[in-house]
Length: 586
Image 1: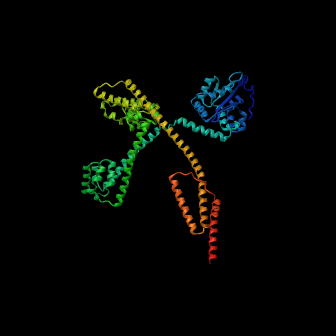
Image 2: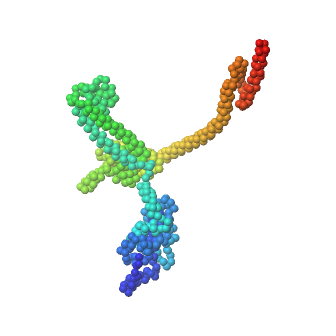
Image 3: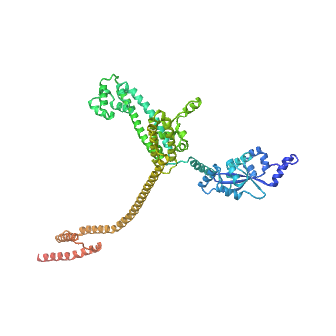
């Protein structure tokens, strides 16, 4: 883009300013922070850009025109994603990071004839840089438009950086930056407490509504049961058990006692069923009532499980607050504050009236009395105090709740030692209001609590170390077993390979015996020989059982056949001689 020179004759004042700036050689540099690294750009024609702001806005969209205005002076890529996150966190907080300081010291002309003029996007980081380097900083105006153009064409201005790589770097840094800002911690999942207490309150409302529906529905058939049994879940279980009241008898008295846990009530239900003035009900209506009451009973059972889950979560996340004021009230305080960290930041005066905001603003509007307590009213301490001492004890309890929440939020090992001690202090204050007995000093109680907490922490560390040692031992044993299994497998393979020749020899022996049987002719001499051989084998077997004899080498098949042939030859000759003698005698 071409920018015309100014004619000093037309505007003498402007001409003097331009000439003065040219003599001083003021160069505008623009700092741009990207997910890939820091970039420093030099802006040409400073005065023209400053005067022709609308033209700058139009030329930003075109890469060719923008290149004629701005050129890349230096680029500092981040070493890793962690380094990028650290630099971005520092910039967002208005702190000059060591990497940024080194980059600007290396590439920005801080001394000499050329005066450095740096343009940045954020005024907070600009003030920090001005303090660090004592240079003039520009924000807004033309600098903002130039940074907009740099952001648009950044992947084209930096060599070796593609648009896809730049977008991937931005996405990864955005995710890691968001995670760091949220400060998500699995061990302190107070969000689970918030959701649990909200679900618990909702379940209470739903169970009450559904129980009233069961009462109205089943009351048409058995209206007397409502007066006998007042508890909702018990009523639903009885409606599920009884069904048709006309079928109740003395045999069902035991099952009624199991539900009601009172023999007198069970007998009263049985008597009322006999003289009830309710209307008859069809089987299909009874089936629907039983199904609905079954759902209500299951919801009540789930509520108990959820309460146990909430108790365990509170013992992990905020044990001191739970020990002081109870799991449910402590969870409501955390839920109302938004998180345990927010509750720890609140002063005691805010915690005292937390949950009573409407009453507070109404009192401020009408200039009436402000509320003395909010959610902490549900704790047992305020209910036990006298009417004149309710405000005093609520103020004292709010103070202790604030201390407990701060200990829970910022302590490393969760222990309920401080919560127990704070509860003892509240009990002592209650007795002081009633009887006038002077409670212990806060300093003495806290010193005792610190000693106990250190002992408990040491014990917990010892247990963790033992668990770690056991885990390592278990892993070593598993590794050794795995190694032994591999060696055993190899040994078995070798044994199998060693056994194969023996099997082959046995097979050869069996084949030789089969050939002997096939070739041998059944003669009495042969039979005797076979019997002798069998007897010899039996004796050898017995001898082998009694005394260990070294195994003899087995003969080959060919040798065995040759020996048999040699034995058969004299037998054949003897038989031929006998035949010749018979012929001569004849």
